[in-house]
Structure formats: C-alpha cells, structure tokens
Length: 296
Image (cartoon, rainbow, N blue to C red; front, side, top):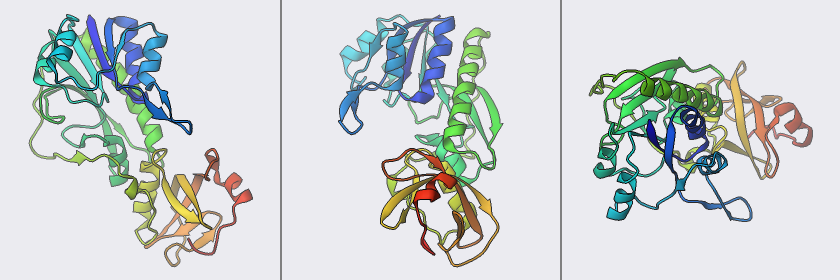
C-alpha cells in the first residue's frame, strides 16, 4: 500500500520501521523541530530522525487546517494514513483524503483512557491491564470505531517506560496485521466506560508521603521516566524512578531504612533514583553519596 505515516515521539518509531519493511511510505509527517537540551539547539523528533535515516520524505507543518496543507496531503494519493502519537488535530478533509481513511494506533483499551497520556494514567490509577486499539479515525477525540484490539497485563512493578516499549511493539504488530488482512469490520466504541487521560502536569510530580503507599508507588512508576516523581532531599530535588510496596509503618515521610519511606498507609521502597545533573542509578549507588534525613 501507499502509506502516509504520522507520528512524532519514540513510541511511534517501531511502527514506522515495521510499515517501511512492508509498504511504500509516501511521506512522513511529524512535529516541527524544537529547541532541546541545555544548549536549546533545534533537535529533530525521534520519528523525523529515523525517517531521514531511512531516506523517507519528511514534512512537519505547523497546522493541517489551511487549504494548502490539505491539498499537499491529498496529492500524495495515499491508500491509508497511519497515525500514532502525532500531536496535531486532523481536520475532516485530511481524514477523508486517503482511500481507506486514517487509522490510529492508541495505547489503551478504548473507550478507557482516550486522550494524551493513556500509559501514565493506566499505571497511576492502578489498572491491571491495558492494551492497544487500531481505530478508524473520526473528528472526535479518540472516538472512532475499533478495528482491532489486544490486551496486556500491567506488571506489579512495571514503569511507564517499560509498558511504553511493550505497547509500541504491540502497536507495530497489530497495524501490520490490520493492513494485510481483508477488510476488518469496525466496531463502534461503547458509550459506557469512557475515561480521559489528561496530559501529565508537572505539578503532579511532587510526592506527598501522607497518601497511601499504593498511590505513591503508582505515582513513582507512572511518572517514570518523565517527568519523574520527585522529593526534596537536603535542598536537592531527587527523582524517584522505580519502586515497590514494602513492609513497615511510621509517620508519613519517615525513612525506615535504606530508601524505604513510610506513607499515610504502609511504606514504599525506592529502587532507582536520579540526583540533579546525574544519570539514573540503583538506590545502592545513590545512597553512597546521599545521606537521607530521618524524614522526607
């Protein structure tokens, strides 16, 4: 097939690679380059970097709502557009342009967790399973009918980074299957069970030890690696990147030994952390140079 690929972050890259092996990618759409890093130099997105390495034509319009952008998209004569974490709203004229329309790879079991941060929210809320849906796109936010879905369990100690990689690989496999099978009937999403995965706000990242340990553990794992749940230690912001529930009780914030901290109910053992200006490290390494106070 002639495919337009539309995606931006690392999550989208395995999908691009899988489609490139089997179909003709007539264009890759991604977000424009943006300043990044300490030097604030323009850095291409992961999808742009990989597409250029594969020799694929890349476009990064600021908007797809103007007539010129729509005409350029339609002129590609694509059979289908595959959209995964692109970052721009597609107007109806774009949705209608490919012969088979636009298919979206969404990292949740729709209608649960429509929206921007389904992986984070699934872990932070304590869902036991999630998955990937291949959806026929329409104008609403992740409201389109579903062609394929596959569920996966969420591990008791799994982080967003780990689940992200599993779902990315699953999405790549499912979209290849969807394009190679005969036409698949699209099943409308049920009206019951709709939830929205709001974009992660950095204000959610500071840890409140008065909350139950199960919630603090989910917060740490759900916000790992970005933006990273954090706690202040001797005036330094330390990100906590991996954790598990632990035995022990005490006043909220009390350090019970090692990097095990009492919560409003129960305790959490921190397994991996990152100090300011340093790489993520196992807690044993972190504690060689960081003396924890009696309470955080």
